[in-house]
Image (cartoon, rainbow over all chains, first blue to last red; front, top):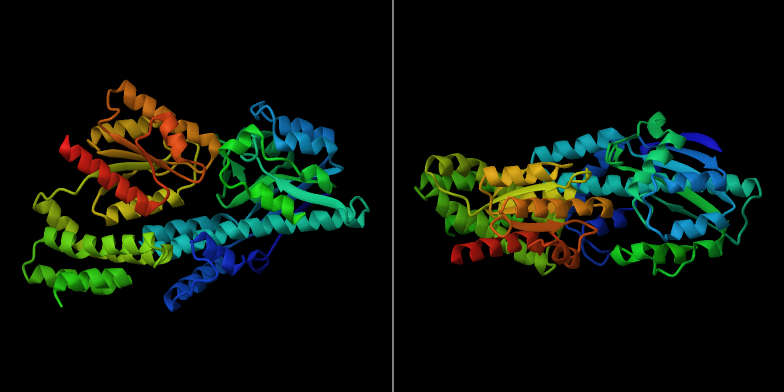
Length: 234
Length: 215
């Protein structure tokens, strides 16, 4: 599978509750009319300015091993290093909501419209995740259609910068995937531009391969422990 | 109602138009810019900070209040400079080298300005030398650093090491924050404090200034 997906902003529209949650507003809290208005306005700006796109390219497991090795800066023991050798299929991906949204966020902050800028930032972050979800779903469907996965399979994505996969791993990932085709570039410090972009590997295989005890060295420094929720979702 | 109280209340509501008008009205009544700042704008932001801490209001409300604060400050700032009135402290902030994420750092800057600090924002991807050179040249009270990635966090220690080499460690306080940063990490690298959000950063930097005044 080697595909570029251009999505509509509607396809990337994030869940309202998640956006408010990232602003510290849980679902039990009554949202004032003014905050609702800020959300609606920020969403309108997002829908007008977002250019969501994603790229995916499947690789063999040994090829991924070389890509995962990166610049040799991963931690000694990592979850991904234990997961991928047992995988059946791996694909590299990158997803973005485009540069214009970041420019709009900056503009709002410059004009002291902090609440609007911060809301748009939350929307864009959530939307980038939705674009990545979309490409993951496409890959899952492709694998199902080809009979490469079944109901007992587990498909999850992993990204450089997390779970002991050093951020410098972006270099090889980019060299192979070429996300520049959808406008994502890499800085010298291995960060992506546009900022609201996500990259990584989608790993498919028996569900059990994704389940691990979070006692890796990288887990000590991680305060999100979001892997637990991801594992539960399988 | 007292005009300063009205400014405080309008600010709390995020009514920036009203704050602007009332600030001008207060100046027309010959109230000093410092009195308007301290007893109107900052007093209002203090209440906003308390309400945020107590979960009575949330981030968007705080940011609306900050915009109102800026509306008042825009009027007062030139007058304060003219009268030689100093801010309560000076803080140099930035996202550490390699990090392009600046939303958290921006929020801290907004809150610090809202509390009456002078903030020099170096932006993102800031090299250690830039933090130290600026803090030294500006005679800053504190340096605030933010990182979103575990891989860029180590750059914070480089700034602290450089402050030590320049014999500025302890004189210029260091506060750090960002998603992967913890209190333990702050202690480990020798930072003076860790802040978990903008309001907490304001309280912490105010604490630095109090200590400095007693030294």
